[in-house]
Length: 248
Image (cartoon, rainbow, N blue to C red; front, side):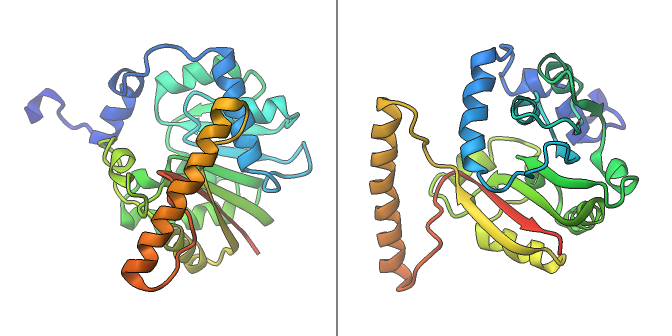
């Protein structure tokens, strides 16, 4: 079987066919981008640069939803990088003002010392091996301006449903709790870590009901944790979470 894909890195082989392999072959529509943008803008409140000309890099930009959101908000200096050509081609349809690059983000980080005020990675860092993560974070820190911010979204290892996301992609290598991600970023000299749950956002009656029921579910998990350990936790139980830290 190995002879069918000789001399190929398995991650690149997977990314070359990412759209087709994940079953996401239907092209997203405008409403998909708009709904996602509204939810994420609320989730990242107070984390985005106030300056709309701030240089921003989105690592693993995928089909460009985050860059689309930023363009709609008036940001002008946007760069997106993704290994998947299929994803980059989709992003180009929706993010005409962004600089889009197909390839590995690490050379770009190395060549742009202290350039970006914000670097993001939605569902990215879990794709790296342990021995790749510290060098990657060092490159990110070097590419940020003083006071610049990094934002990650990643599977939440503490979630009761962690496996559905973590093991749903063959190229996932490592998974984090909010505390684990905080430790890793602190180790690299980042400060002011903060994590948020990717909870249901209220935008109508149905989502209002979901949000209310989720609070009950979350309370039950907190109670179960208290019963087992006698201690508390940070209250983030969603399948994925977002975390941020700042370069001092």
